Structures are given as C-alpha cells and as structure tokens.
Image 1: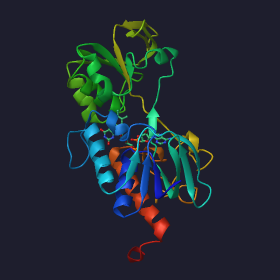
Image 2: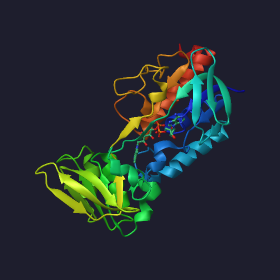
Image 3: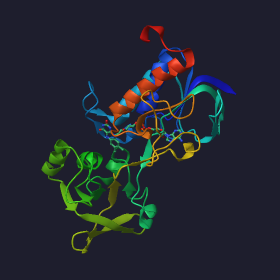
Image 4: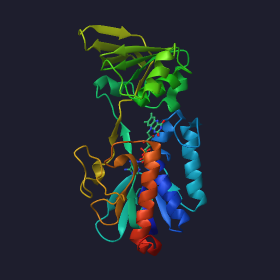
Length: 310
Ligand SMILES: Cc1cc2nc3c(=O)[nH]c(=O)nc-3n(C[C@H](O)[C@H](O)[C@H](O)COP(=O)(O)OP(=O)(O)OC[C@H]3O[C@@H](n4cnc5c(N)ncnc54)[C@H](O)[C@@H]3O)c2cc1C
C-alpha cells in the first residue's frame, strides 16, 4: 500500500492549489483525478479574470498549475477512477484500479459535471454534434451554423469564443433576459455572428449519424422552429460530483459538501475545496482560495496549529 500525508481527490484549480501548498510544506501528497487533470478550466477557451494573467487559455493555466505542483514534489495521477474509499478512521483509504492508497488526511476537490438538458435525443448526438466544451470541440464546427444553450456567463462567453470557428452561433435561452455580467452580454450582442432565440427551449435534437438540426419550442406562443445546425454546445451549469461521498460527509440540499471556514467537513480529517463545496460563487479564484485554506488547515490538522498564529 502506498502511503501519503495527504490524498487529494480531484485535480482542478482547488486540488492543484492544495497540492502546491502542501508539497511545498514538505508533505507527501497524491492527487487522484478520475479524468484529465486541470478540471473545468480545461473547458474554458480563454480565462480573462485570473489576476495577473490576462487572456490566458484555460488549458495553459491548468497546465502551469499542474507543473508547479509537480515541481514541488506532488504526485499526480490522472484517469484514475476511484473504486472505493474508507474515510472513517484516522487513516484514510482510497482504492483505484491501479492500487490502494493510504493518507492521514483527505481533501475532496472533485468539482462538478456539466448539467445535461435531459432529452433522450441529447444522448444520441453526444460526441457527434453535441458538446459541453468549446475549447475541446469548437474547431470541428469551422464555417458551420451552431447553437449554444444557456444564458449565464459561461454560455455567453463561450458563444463569443465559438464565433472564431462557426459561421453563426445562435444562443437559445429559456428566459427573456440573461443571468450574466453586463460586459459578457454586451460582447455577445455586439458580435455580428451571434444571434438570439430567447424564451425558447430545445425540444429535440435531430439527424441521422450526426446532428443536423434542432427543434426549438417558443415558450411565449408555443410555436415550433426548426434550425439546421450541425453543432450544439450546452452551458447550463454544473451538478456537483458529491453523490459518492453522501454517506461520508454532510451535504446541503443541493448536494454540495458542507464545510466550515477552514474547509473542514463533518468528518474528522476530511476537507473539501472548490466548486464541490456549499458556497455562492464558483470561480477559478474562489477554487484556488479554497484550496489554499484547505491545505493550511490540513497542515494544522496534521502537525498542530502554528504557534506563531495562535
Ligand atoms: C465553460 C466554462 C467556463 C468557465 N469560465 C471561467 C472563467 O472564465 N473564469 C473563472 O474564474 N471560472 C470559470 N469557470 C468556472 C471554473 O472553471 C470553476 O469554478 C473551477 O474550475 C472550479 O475548480 P475545482 O477545482 O473546484 O473543480 P473542477 O475544475 O471541476 O475540477 C474537479 C476535478 O475533479 C475531477 N473529479 C471529478 N470527480 C472525481 C472523483 N470522484 N474522483 C477523482 N477526481 C474527480 C474532475 O475530473 C476534475 O478534474 C468556467 C467553467 C466552465 C464550465
């Protein structure tokens, strides 16, 4: 069995930041990520609001965080699905298909998954026209007509980024107004390639082997419009990936992990950081902040509080 001071589940901004702080403090740290290390940031075309690093691609930002953690000695394993875990005792155990790991403390930083529309036809065209990641799939739709579903910051910002590839981008949103910052709305409205279909929702995705259209129902008068599009990008929020932890730590009604201000959960030695936590604002900076606090609190937990800070 491989033993570490701290095991971090999830290698997004929260997990990587905690990894940087803890490795730098000479703790042995393992980050396990069930997918690609970097988290949702990889899905972000351009990050414009990370202080000091304007207009950095999400992929680059995540890669730099990972590099920094590794340089301090953090061990990182991507594509490691967690098969089982036991966080009850003082020692914490995690099993993946590649091995069993023991830690003295755990930080859960598993973020969330893209929320799906929940239509049957959505399942048929995932990967053949329907995407949840503009950065990953935008260039497949060069010179094509596509739709973006959603009305928040992510939807508007990613719609504008998709205009670099697509001929037109129609934003479909169920309300008559957006839930986004004024600058994001302005940028979308001023982009000649962006069109809007408000108070509407997709009823069905259509096509044979790949997506060729969407049927859109007006929520105002019930009329049906058929759009010929080859791509649909869905940005309607995220659902927390907390289900597997529900027996182990307290969750809110919205299935977020409840922590105190030190990121401690209801379970001794188990901390949580980033989007998975119960909190109001989910950004890279807030995830990084949570990761920092969790790491410092874990240091206190493992070694006792720093006497200078008492
Ligand atoms: C399209 C889009 C655009 C965005 N744009 C911006 C922006 O411009 N600026 C900004 O500040 N924020 C932006 N955000 C929000 C920001 O990306 C998130 O707030 C931030 O990434 C949260 O970091 P995190 O580490 O908590 O979680 P995540 O980034 O979600 O990382 C969680 C990691 O945990 C892994 N994981 C999941 N389940 C498990 C499990 N059971 N075991 C192990 N690993 C697991 C995942 O694979 C993932 O790598 C955007 C989000 C999206 C989706």
